[in-house]
Image (cartoon, rainbow, N blue to C red; front, top):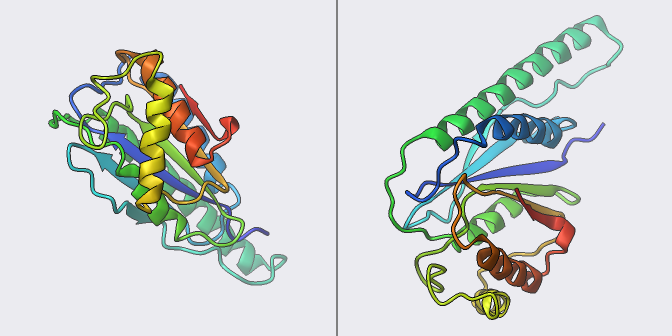
Length: 223
């Protein structure tokens, strides 16, 4: 039985431009699916990591750990079966609680007027440090992905002609400064809000950024 598998990081953009109302039913279904798939085979070190994006993003994600490893013992004994059943039930309840907590955070009020999106990559690297060989990291991002602080303000200066190259340039500079981690076994899903201005240019920027980082096209997608 696998003892490790997937690390799950949830990133929440809590700036005034980000709202989820029309997409809430879909998000609920997606959260249940993603949490269950991430932890289906996990038997130890189970945790949901979270980051909040504001104008001054904390680069250290916060873990919320289940804190209970699957009981060890002879699986064919009645006592062990009872212990495993109780553990499985507790794990399911914990997962349901993390989904509810994530939804509450999505719905909570937003106060920041600026967005520091690039700090999330330090956070992703911090979660990767917790990985065991062969682990994957699933990153779920709720954001319009529009940075409004250095090194690039995506509210101005982007065009359909230059967006991809600007994304590559920003990523190259961050890699030069050692701010980017590796991309092996990494999967990013970005849930954009109900209203997203200049979505085509923003997506081109991130296509360039992610490609320069080394992500394959099947390692990230926007919803």
